[in-house]
Image (cartoon, rainbow, N blue to C red; front, side):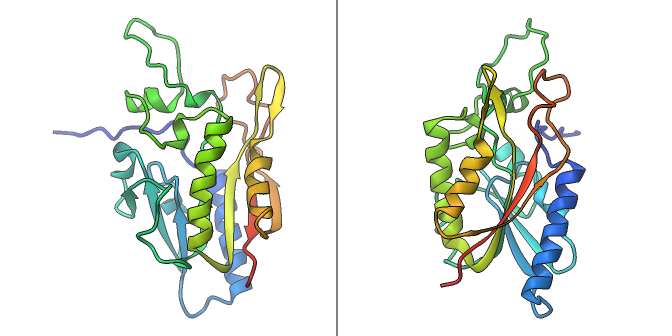
Length: 228
């Protein structure tokens, strides 16, 4: 019997993979990593796109709360990233991830079979509502910020001093107003003493049929953790 893997509506595009690889190569040069590989964690791993970023000298680890997605790669574990205490502090050189953007893809409405309209959401991809504590289930707002505050706090503990954060993020529009989702994520780390290194536009804009898809492009933001 053939088992069809549950699709994910927001996997890493080639520009994201390429930009993350370049950032990891630059980090390896800065670290002088000729003794051991970089240990990289993605706390929102989805179907495992972070593992496509790996190359010689880089070991990737993923955490994903939705089992249908987590089970698609052996290097991803199914767990809740608001509690990563099973790893000791300083376990990773790099946090590289793409948190959900808090846009309409977080809609949890499941249309009836008679509804033939195209819906690109996390819930419709899963065929069910997203799990509790899933960032994919949260629209931009207080609940979204509260959950990511918990996850970033876990990541901050796990990241070694001098380690780096690679964030693939994107703003979106609500009622004609740009929502500064990317700025909030970046400010979270800057407010804890991280140093901003680069903020690169990737030239990718999201779902092609969306009326707003040309308005906010994806970015890769690279930050460096303070050295105590």
